[in-house]
Amino acid sequence: MRILGIETSCDETSVAILEGDGTVRSNLIASQIERHRPFGGVVPEIASREHLQHLMPLIDQSLDEAGVALSEVSAIAVTSGPGLIGALLVGLSAAQGLAYGLRIPLVAVNHLEGHIDSPYLQLSGPAIPMPDRFLSLVVSGGHSSVYDVRASEGARMINRTRDDAAGEVFDKVAKFIGLPYPGGPQIEARGRDGDPARYDFPLARFKDGSVDFSFSGLKSNSIRLARREGLTPPIESMDRETLVRLAGFCASFQKAVVDQILDRLETIWRSLDSARRPGELAVAGGVAANTELRERATSWCAEAGLSIRLPERRYCTDNAAMIAFAGLRRLGNVSGDPLRVKARSRMAVGG
Ligand code: KG4
Ligand code: ZN
Image 1 (cartoon, helix red, strand yellow):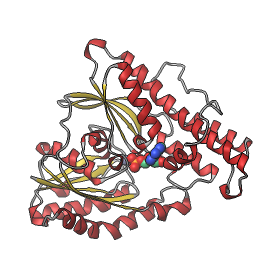
Image 2 (image 1 turned 135 degrees about the horizontal axis):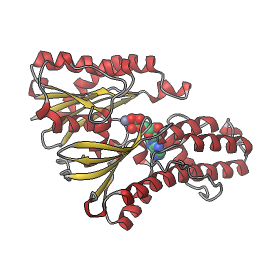
Image 3 (image 1 turned 45 degrees about the vertical axis):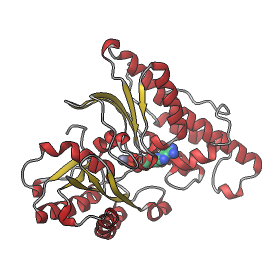
Image 4 (image 1 turned 90 degrees about the vertical axis):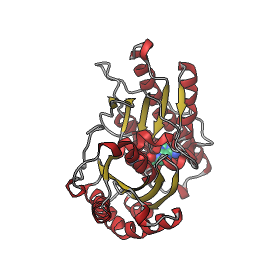
């Protein structure tokens, strides 16, 4: 059993080859970040064109790197949603053509389910066996949710964001202060020497006691504060004192995002029946690459008494290995004509 995975839902074209036990033979990513950077975010039309240009050569390279012939592939997994519809269609059409031509099954994978499963992939060797039940935190550029995942029933969404996603606020705040896209790693790097207690941001809470995330208040507060503190582009012309304030701002902002994530985890954890709580937290998505989140989630798990599973950094941001892996686990449910699979820009987990 060998599966080829294709991911084109946003701004990374990615192709991976995995063995049936989850061993990653190749996982290539053609990032379009430089093409979108002048616009400070992803431009859908550019994304589709870039996928078109890069996908077929990347499939060849991925097979080459894995030392596998196309005829040795036994199934194709592809992201069918959620994402940019034009971008999704490029990957899906290619996957449909391949599956149809090779007469092998096509598994449509929900991008979020790819993220949920990603912490169990290893850099080398078979995937780590997934527990029968775990709590999954997915924090990316488009989504922020906690799921209760059961092997037998799939994922149940416990909360979601009411407005911006965690990665999205990193990107928007970074853009305002003149840092390039994507903002998450930039803010993390700038904040490394900053004082996280320099600025205090209120923790967002809902009057109705909801455990949903909300990052838009933090975004507005941060932008207002940055303007007041003179933290506006270009960074190159900031003096030393301003750069110290900028580092403090980045560290404080990052702390505020992580504070909210841990606050929701804690509240959700307490609301679960203590006799039947999951034994593991798996963190996933682009923001799972953030060191402060990784460290504080690890400490929180140690205190709460559950194990933690953090993804390898290369499996945090969008990649086809996680799609192929999620596809492997869903192969048993595939039936019918690959040409009937539809791309959907919006798609719930389990949908
Ligand atoms: O999972 P992903 O590649 O795309 C979506 O499916 O949305 O996540 C990309 C997001 C971007 O918003 C990026 O700024 C954020 O992940 N990100 C980070 C870090 N690395 C990537 N956020 C905070 N700290 C990081 N080190
Ligand atoms: Zn993603």
